[in-house]
Length: 202
Image: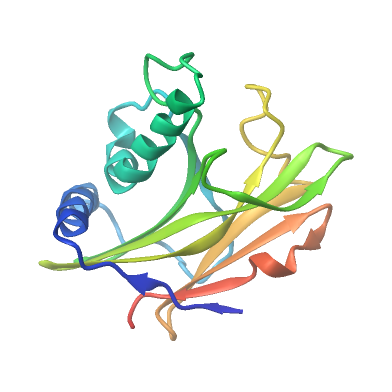
């Protein structure tokens, strides 16, 4: 299945893009090329509820969605998260090549995602969540939006990620097609709805 994310063109969104991608480019300075990007590898997770300095690029990229999620918790009378953000996690992959940086990020919130499937044996869920692809090409930056799968373990803090021998969200870069491929394995089987290809170029 191939995703065709829609481009955003508002001034506010362009400002957000510039901030996020400029920081992504800063991260790329001095970094080597992504080794063997065509190989499948697990996606990287971050907890953005109380973000640290290393989370800045993801918080900037998702600032509007994180603030919206916070407001919805407050509107529901939930004031437990006066410090930091309401529960929010992120999964991403970064691909670097020369002066180009691609960052694909999926945001997991209770208010922004819908259930795809759930494994009760291990208490692991797969959700369809907002996804953004940021692409920095020298001095030019673009961003696309779509939906992507987020593999979510149970809510206990010690289970931040699922057991990779049982369930894993993975990514690879198709160098010929200039596209990021995504997939999810749950209970040793592929989740069909989560097999996606997201191209860097229109």
